[in-house]
Image (cartoon, rainbow, N blue to C red):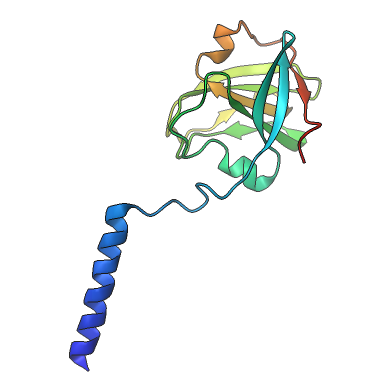
Length: 155
């Protein structure tokens, strides 16, 4: 009986080492699906992923290794409130624009990969838009500018 227990333990140890060697996917890394929305800035339309459910907002851009040049994620918050974003398990340097219910950008802040500090909006907002770091500057988007949001295709 002792030999049988040792064999079982050895087997499980080997399986565990093998799983660690090939990598175990993070829970939630790929199982959250996102809707799409369109943000319109200075008349130019950009399709972005849309995170409006608690699960979508919690997942955000975590575990992504890259983001196309004009891709991003729009987060919706209800009720509208001061919100905080962090970069847990996020590999891409991002800028976040906080947007009030009128579509006015209240803040644009840089966020660094894996930073667990909270980046807060200065006012109550309805949305935040995460884009590649430097994107807002490259497109001359500033605090006080207005973004139009089209979520008609989102569920």
